[in-house]
Image (cartoon, rainbow, N blue to C red; front, top):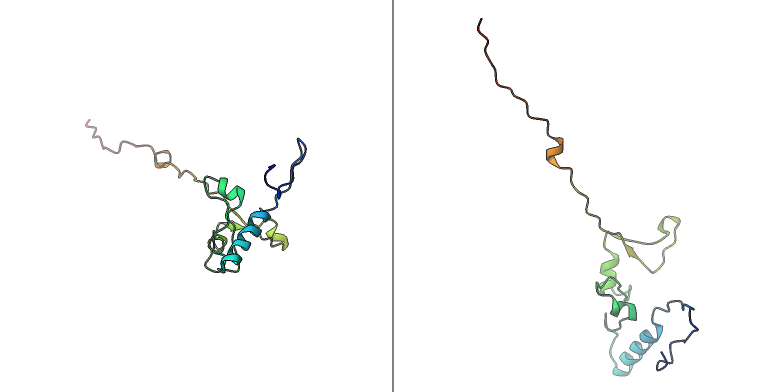
Amino acid sequence: MVLNPDVVVRGRGVMEKCSMCQQRLQAGKLEAKKAGTALKDGAIQTACQGACPTQAIVFGDLNDKDSQITKEQADERSYYLLEDVGIKPSNTYKVKVRNQDEPLLSSHTPKATNHSKTEHHS
């Protein structure tokens, strides 16, 4: 942290609010501008995005219809927090997939009965 002037060093036990890596975003935009190219989808990664082994964190341009973030947001599992009260933040989340066991067939089948007929002679 000492070598990065964009990161504020705090005292022990003090948490800093996430800035969504604005320093990385600004540096990436500046590099693309210097190169004279458009900023490509996925060219900039935030610290948490780069550290996530499952690639569960995705950032991008929602105005680009071909970006990964737009495709992820269109997924049926995506939702917004407080969506039911009319708030539409830019952060979306996905519903956790839960595997539910199907009822076992053996527990619902009737017990076997003996249907054989026996004859009685008197």
